[in-house]
Length: 303
Image 1 (cartoon, one colour):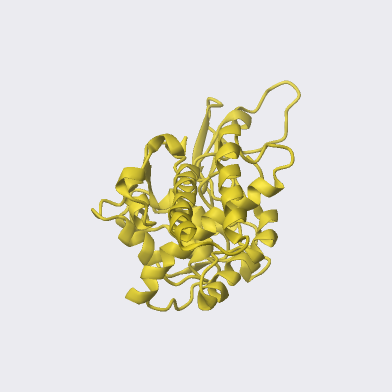
Image 2 (cartoon, rainbow, N blue to C red; image 1 turned 135 degrees about the vertical axis):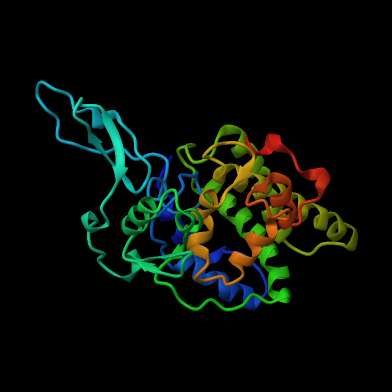
């Protein structure tokens, strides 16, 4: 796993290529540097730095003792909890006191919860959520988006229909960008490199010169095929805790939290992706949201 925020700068020329109004919207996506927060995922330039969104793993650091090893050194706690030892020196996770969180250095550290409340930082948010564990309010509380809470415009039907097209085009550009910059062959696996290389070559060919009508018809199908792998790839990057073929609200957070303040259709898009309203987005639902045909859905592509 690597830190991907550096790639935000290179997306300024690629982000969600679409009509002029779409370009203007998505240009904001790549020019604002998101603040780190929740679920651990893979390589995606817009997603938050790994670890900051991780609710599942957090190593609590303590000073090493010369003779007695602190059991908390190897004990992992969820985000919002810290490790303490009981009378028998057994490590246990307890909710962190929000007052122990470092004060925010600016608005960029603030986050908005689904309770429409602004929290000083992700630390304050997760500590608060931990204190509400076991309650109805705590069950419904999730991180909504990065930055202070603000008014989000209503997403119109016409806008929603255009959103997945820009998203899938942007995902393709993300992979092409990673391919172009993966000099050390450590951003993509060997199999991913082979697939993205083909997308990269087709992209360059489609951009070059004039085409006959027959070739344009062929190119239309080629263009669609270029989206199949990026859509599967993004699903695999998000499906991490656990890897079960379903995306939860928490697993979606690294992608949706930075997008919501800049793309007002983000929340409605992901809500409608959950076609059966069971609070989980299956691969088939995800692919359908991005306009991928049922016969092109392939679980092997997300591994």
